[in-house]
Image 1: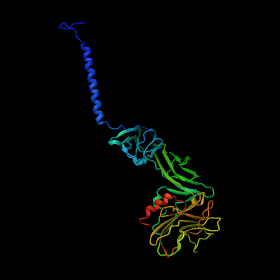
Image 2 (image 1 turned 45 degrees about the vertical axis):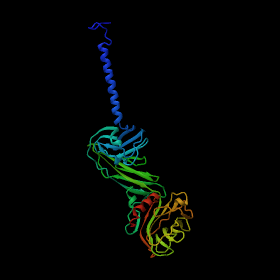
Image 3 (image 1 turned 90 degrees about the vertical axis):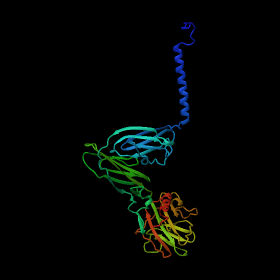
Amino acid sequence: MAEDGRGGESGVSPVIAALLILALTVLLTGVLAVGILSVGMQDPAPAAGIMISENTGVITLAHFSGATLSAGEYAVLVNGIDQTAHFQADERDFGPGMRLTWEYGMTKPLGSVSVVYTGGGRSVVIAEKQFSREGKGEVNAAFTAVIIEGKNATSQVKTGVSGTKPLPGVIAGQADLWVVPDQGSDQVTIAFTADEEGSDLTFSWTSGNGQTASGRTADFVYDSAGSYTVRLDVLNTASGESGSDSMKISVRDPGLSAMTWVKRDTLVTGGFAARTTTGNTGLNLVEGGWAIQYNNYPGIEFKVVFTGSTSQFQARSREEMVPGIWYHAAGVVDQSGTNAAETLRIYVNGTYPHAIMNEGDPTGMTYFEPVKYSDIYLNPSFTISSYSEVPFPLSGAEIAAIYAAERDDPR
């Protein structure tokens, strides 16, 4: 052992002493850091596996694993701008197996798409993808539609009295074109034509139900009820400019919805509220039609003529009308129904009454549309504010929405 200048042995060499001091400093620093973090640490951001993609102008966010992002605690940024509303994500949880989409278009610049967690008073990027698409000039991609098989339900809505609309406003915006299948082929065929034409233009169509087409025109066939989005993408191969447009098509089952706002003015025991008429006082089995009428028992009735029948079929609500009160009566014929309750229904004030009663079973029969244009029968014992005939069955939710939208001002 070496001796120091005082003639004694040294217990720790200078090198070892330096190492011990360094280790102690690191240990104390680590303990201090842990203490500080434990005081101010926030909850960790949720871990979610999200894939971001873009194809023909549609941005898609696919959640494939991890935590569900709660509505209001995440945002979707496109080019750094909050576009959450375009993905219909403002009030929607985003969890595994779900997709969020936005038809962004092919002509706008696209630099980045991010999903940001905004809970806990902070923002943390959960997923992000960079793009490098520059904006281009836009080609007009507008197109028109012509129904060549089936019934144009948009144009065949009938209204009467005052203040009525071609379709009830609360559902009118759900589609650009309403169609009912042809009762012979049970399908709809629609021809679409692009407004622009030229040798440098290419066209790409999608039908919303799996069909595709190229060329300036496209014919698509629909054989089941539902909502479909027809999309057209146009590319100018010479300039690189592109454009896209879409149209919402609603294919509805055949049938009828007859609606009226009616008020009982006297203590009359019965009478017509609204009905088709051909100049006589009752429904005609030859010329067809419908009637919404009232009796003390069993209440408000919806009476319909079907082909092949020798009498009218009725759905009765057992709803007694209090004089001076407005009632919204809606009768529905759905020819795709499998029993009387599904085929023939009546709603009063937006609800399907519990005491409903059907007379007869029209299952499998076809609603007999009146030969002459429908009119309204003005009974002096009733005030009739409006009526409308929609040539397809409205659902219970749609009728409830119509009533809710109009009850404060019944037309």
